[in-house]
Image (cartoon, rainbow, N blue to C red; front, side, top):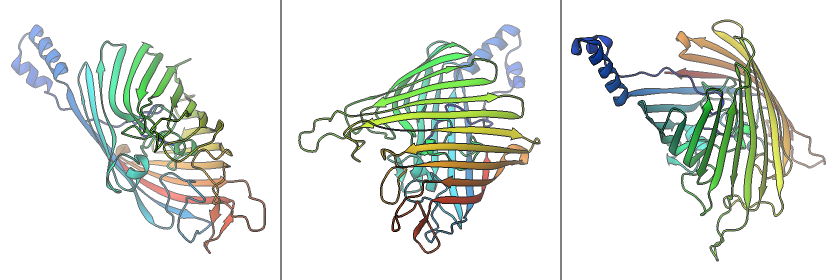
Length: 400
């Protein structure tokens, strides 16, 4: 799934602010009152921030697929799709302008993963996509509204490689929403609880494919210190209008999502993502079940810092799409399920600007019965004879 926006673990990068120094202020204003007024004026003007990252990877696939693809029957991986070669992942540039009452963000992505993360909103093939473009107005310290294109609230992982501990992304990420265009409002009851509700066009589209609107929501709370819980929802009619009558069929798509992380000690974190989705009717012209079908999964995360510059993390995930309504399918186009285990190292260099992530991943699918039935993964002869896939790779990330 997707995610473009960091709803659970926000991307922490160093922002460069452009404001006058204290010395300049003191030179211009002599007394305390005027210095305070100058500070207020600076707050009103706001500041710009520029950040971003670039990532590349090399992935070895022990099945040695003839096509050098990690995709299997259908959508077994999100971004790390190629094996046996050095590959460019994503290049991001983010510009933000912030003052005391508002914020505006333009977030652009470049490279092969730009299309895969923002399909339907790419400006040039494999070159440039709008990842986010929104602004927020703070009516009060507790209430704000955001308009534009923003990342989805659903899920634990995000599109940004530096923000995730694991480099390869989960099936929950791959089979959920990535981004939305619309309007959302957030009210903070306190620093430990808030509620967001929004109206959006649809799932993963800058423009709407019908006149219906989707509803998104998120309730955040902190039961105890260092334990963050997000309860997320999206519900939408994603059906295309009838090509003859132009009427909009009765259909729905919805996802209930739970995301939580607990920083047990300074060096050890546990996380969990669980999602349950359902669909009835057409989904953006791709068809859909006449009766309600469901899908879902759960992922558990454990990360620990062994030294200041090295950490290791594990992810276990079970994802079930036996109904076939999501993109994870067999070569024959049938629904399936998968158990995945991922072990990732995180090496930090150059004061945290460079991240090197060695990663081992195993994906195991049910074996399809029958002598001539196609299995999930391709072998070195180009035949689908493997029901599991093991990869080992290195990711190279520079963030600024």
